[in-house]
Image (cartoon, rainbow, N blue to C red):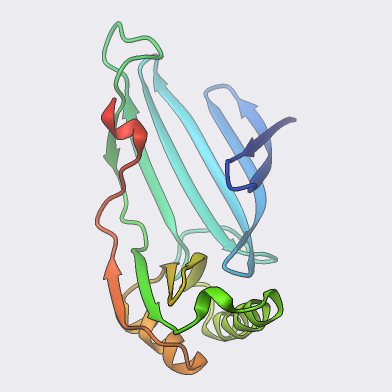
Length: 188
């Protein structure tokens, strides 16, 4: 049995237990995603010295991880060019579609002045609705500014995002699907 611990600059932590079987690593963890407890399985299989597949699967805690509608699954192949060391560029080839990610802009005058208790109430209301709607919609995180809240969600479509907002009485002034992500490593 192996353990994996990851910490990021936002104070978030991830802990997983892993096994190794010949050419395959399998990591299992329990995660809190948008207020929902989820079981996550991450599998890495070595195809050759320079090629790997990565598979990410998740399901509500207590449920079985398997491929079926409403469960997010993604598998990618990573190929390291011949002779490339760890500094070599990785090429990712998507095997399956993942559920889309959305950025929601919520105009809320005075949002930055909400007390921790008020923000907790908003979060509890959102999580209650998410539980009722099921695992196909997940709240990832939100950023509170002076007069707006920017939320990151995973959902099958914009309609599901707007249904969540309607049920919760939240504004959803703008809903935009994320097409790709970049970060400082994109410059390498």
